[in-house]
Image (cartoon, rainbow, N blue to C red; front, side, top):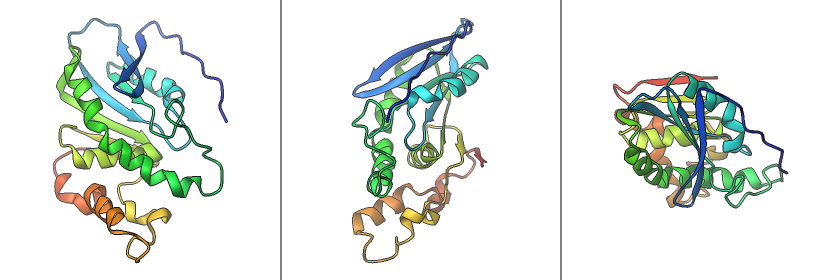
Length: 199
């Protein structure tokens, strides 16, 4: 099911649709003519999309941040599935999280090449499923200086979808990905890096 979206009129922010290779994104840039901006990559939640994050992205951009909002795989423009059907969450949730983490370097390279990016101040955030995605990317790539998670998790093994992660049903590939990306299992990678968890 799709819902209508509407561009938000904001005299202080430039919104532009961009494609980072095959990833459709919205880019928000403050219109105050600074040379460089701190940047936030913002990931949406399950069954949502980049379009529905315009309000939050506009707020961040109004306060002086460049904001990049990607569509996750299996959402909106990217092979969208029927998120409310039985079994869809179990089949696609983790795959969406892992695919987003694996394609993160593509977005990171794009950000680094933008003239308006202050490379010393690049952060990542997400809501719900986007919180899982952003925390996994933050764990994997130390280029990101800080992390904000809205209603997501940095302790993936507590997720019901992963409740059998110690059983034989949870294959070796899944166990390896969990071990690699789960922030709780990689505390050493998070030391001295600011994290804000909001519920």
